[in-house]
Amino acid sequence: MRLHQSRFDVSKGTLELALECIAELEDVWNRIDELVFCNQVRVLEAFGDTRISLSHMWPSTGYGYGDTGRDGLERLFAKVFGGESALVRLAWTSGTHVLKTALFGLLRPGDVLLSVTGTPYETLRPVIGIEPGENGPSSNSLAGLGVRYRECSCLVDFESGLIDSSEMENVLAEHIVEDNTVIFIQRSRGYSSRKTISMESMRTFMEILNRRWPNVLTLVDNCYCEFTHVYEPPSLGVSITAGSLIKNPGGGLASTGGYVVGPEKYVDLVAESLYAPGLGKEAGSNPYGYRDVYQGVFLAPKVVGEALKGACFASLFFSRLGYKTDPGPFESRGDIVQQIDMETPEALIALAKAVQAASPVDSFVSPEPWDMPGYAHKVIMAAGTFVQGSSIELSCDGPFIPPYSAYLQGGLTKEHVVYACMKAKDALDELGIAPAGRT
Ligand SMILES: *Cc1c(COP(=O)(O)O)cnc(C)c1O
Figure 1 (cartoon, rainbow, N blue to C red):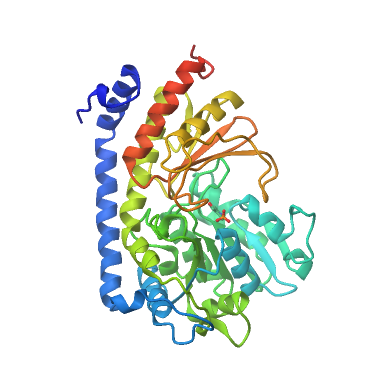
Figure 2 (tube, rainbow, N blue to C red; figure 1 turned 90 degrees about the horizontal axis):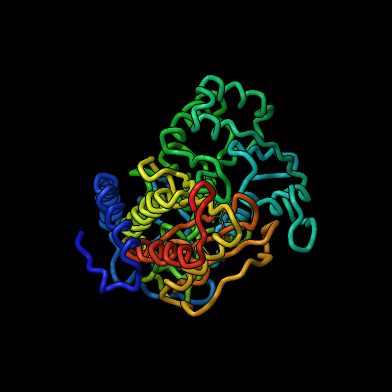
């Protein structure tokens, strides 16, 4: 790529480093193009198979009975994700809300929730009842309802190569003491330093489970993972796969909402949990129409590809600057999250401010660490997004604890990510900040 420095407000050395990184990533970016191609065809064929037409984009009101747009969208999601049935609703505010609804739909008093990927994402802890929420412990948590909770990390350890599949089965046997267990799998790393669960590991895990514990249900938190592989968890026999529409599957266009996919009987339980027993999937209107969601899922494979390319770039660029990055630039990826250990509060703030300043919306705003609801420590967040809180758009979150890791994710175009990284380097240089070991 030939870009002339006079076109950019970045230093010469920074632009040169960026161009070197882009050249080095040629093979990685080409492989992402192949992934995008497969997934674009998967989505396109699903549109054809479900006979989506313009009339599906129309709004509905009130109870929403006979809402063809909603029904078409759910058939489309079921097809794209390889499941029998889907619930795709704008009534869901966030991923946490979707997962909460699914947990309450599947679990009954006396049941056991078993997380096999360690302690779940921060905002889910008050839902389970293992940490207090903003207003203290809630009797509305799963624990308050009489659901017991256990956890292990056997799927993470398998992914990391620490144990093999027979050891994983042994760990499961220790923890699955009763059939009334629902297994929780968080594929993405979230704000943690573990590996993302690949679809290959998911397949091995589900083979063990389906063979030995066929009555045990599974709930997969698929946030950030959609379209990073050529197939999705529902096709492996997962009971419920859940995610947020303002992450990957909304393609940057969906303005709110979430989805679950799985066998009809489990999706129906989630629908009852969201609405009411007796209502289920038949109710639920949307007075604004469905075009953004349809168009968003159509674009999602490409947008996820851009985010993946941006993440690979950020990993290489910051590792060249001397920061520890995970995943590494050439590692395979199962989500769009890039961890960069910024080492000091100053460096993390500088990165967040640079990402914010390089955003299309609210570029003039300066992010500060704050006590975000649902999180145990201060978090700094940069998100100059069109949709509030959207993290398929370029955004950067950093929990304010050592090693001051920045979790960079999203980017509707890879060029946006590259530019933001360049601006961050210039800002760090200007402040004289360098990682330990470099001066
Ligand atoms: C984003 C995310 C969630 C849900 O978060 P919301 O901010 O409520 O959408 C849950 N789990 C993981 C792994 C996530 O990345």
